[in-house]
Structure formats: structure tokens, C-alpha cells
Image 1 (cartoon, rainbow, N blue to C red):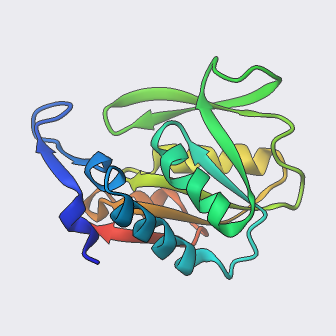
Image 2 (cartoon, one colour):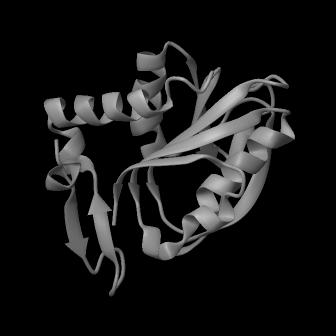
Image 3 (cartoon, rainbow, N blue to C red):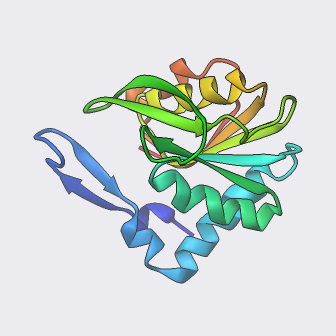
Length: 170
């Protein structure tokens, strides 16, 4: 299946010059969405994954069904102020600004093997911050999986030592 056929590109969103990759045209097609999740599963299933961590919000769309398919748990990485229990937090730069991510302090046990899953790898800021939070709790980041990678933004540079899988590359 050519997954690019299911990804809509929207010019000048959210600002002029950006060509936004919209996965809603993939996720609203049950066959394509399932095929994408299964293709990611195939690529990562032999990594000995204990948990999937997915950053808000589209990381939930990729990470949760991937966790179900792999039979492992899912850890939501949320924006600051969204989690109800004790958290750790870290700030980071986005492609279009700045933000802060948070994770429950008890979400990961030391030594657990964590795969980060998200819809898109752009500049790498969100994923490097997610990896930092996981490592603060003693988790081992064993890889990161994406539906889309914007290779021209060099996000992999911010992810040294992390095995990266991308279903589609622009």
C-alpha cells in the first residue's frame, strides 16, 4: 500500500511556507489506518518492547493502537497541566514555537524498554524531550516509530542512539 496516497498535504498551514502533512485522511480510512499500524508493528515487534510512549496528541493515534497490537501498555506524554498525579516535566522547541511535556512519575519502572511512537518526525524536539523524560525515570528508549518523517528537517540528529523507523519519508 502506498501510504502517501492517504496523507493530505495542506500548503501554508499553520503558517506560510509550511506544507502540513495531514494524517486524518489516513486515519479516517479503516483499511489504510490498520495497514499503517500493522506495518509499524512489523518493523518494531522484535525489539523486546515493554511499553509504548506517545506524545500528545497524535502520538496517541499511533501509539495506542500499536500498543494494543503488540500486547503492551501505553504511556501518554501530555502537555503541561494535563495529568492528574505527580509528574516530571521538560520544555522543548517545536517546529513553530515552544512547549512543555509532562509524564507521570510512576509511568515507567527503571529498566523498562520503551518505544516512542508518534505521527511525525520533524525537527526532533518533541521526541528528544520525550526520550529525556523516559530516561529520567530509568526507562531505556529502544527506538522511535513514525508514520511520517520530514527528512529535510534533520530530526534524527536530535535522536542520537535511537533506532528510528518511518513508514513514509518526505
